[in-house]
Length: 152
Image 1 (tube, rainbow, N blue to C red):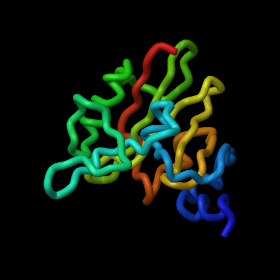
Image 2: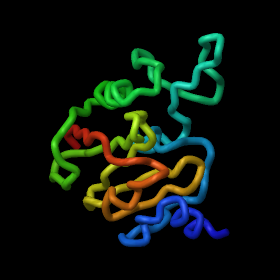
Image 3: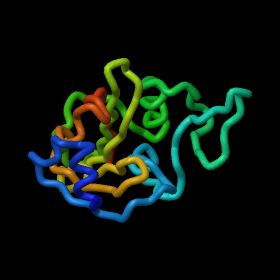
């Protein structure tokens, strides 16, 4: 199966909007890292049953280790972001969208580009550029839970 076929199978709403892959698949980093502009580490609070961080993952010191939307918001607040009302492009601002499932558990992060389009790292798959956030809404990532912004 080609990369775009697999992506459209996982995210069928992408077929209704403009999108394209912008990088090859890469297991070194994930969507949270990509939204934070890091393509060298997988950002996730992965803790062993013994309460120790597992190797191969990065999580900023000072952010809670439970996988909650509040902790992911705090992660981006530590990077200068604040909650805002709209995903619409605003000149002079950088934006991040956090997705969550029906239980409120964070599932994905996207970053807005200077063009107003969005960029996402799809797990270990490719990075993509997509015209709107709607293309990723669905069974895999849930819905957009919060938009954050900081001065560009």
